[in-house]
Image (cartoon, one colour):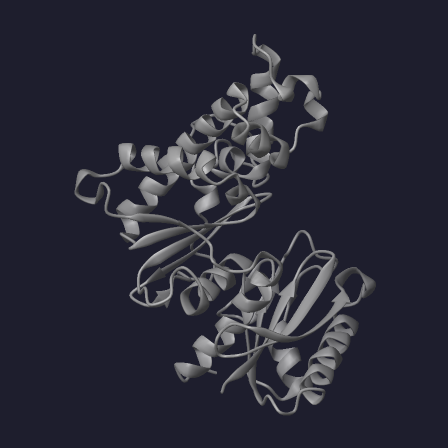
Length: 320
């Protein structure tokens, strides 16, 4: 059996797990990301937790470490200018963890890690061509073509959330206007609901609660309960997402697109209109040939499992 350490670095917390060949997390650890204002101290603490986990589970030999983190560059092994982490600059995470633990270590961004988790253990198992799209605060993506993750020239390819789908559209955190994530993320969903609620003439829970109390969860529950405004919000959001996915298909022709993140809890309220619009916008030769699937990774452990999958994938392919 192969066992790998998967590490999910978030802006607040870092989750660590020992993962088996079937994607089961058999032991856990964690630490606060924000408790270490100096990067070197954080790496010391992280490496200590890795070794504690390994030493407490010696019956499960560990072959390597995978790390998913914001702005993690697979090529350079660095976290590069991550805006939601305390430490600034280019941080040699791969090199420093390897030096302290003696274990082969691999890093990538969280969306790529999630895609690899789906490839080895989830909805994309057995697929050589697919895309994973994360719908959270923003829109992320991991794209696999011919059984290889697409990293591009400098390690940062696959930014589906930042394709422009609306000229002079909503202002994005990247500084440009009209990016997909300003419409198809949970943040975009909520902003759409707030805008529509202001001019909606009928009854809706989204009007009753006040725009500052509208959340993605509320919109999803309202849509499931037949709230017409909430359904309109999902229809608008799905149209934008469907357009973005159709454009992605024209470039990479995946077997499937897998959606992951908080928004997929809306179920058919999201998937049915998104699939319809995706095929409406699709190049004719691809219509109705690309599967749209929900993630099969367990939500709480998805980051750990995806990072562990990165390590297993790289080691299996003989990379260091």
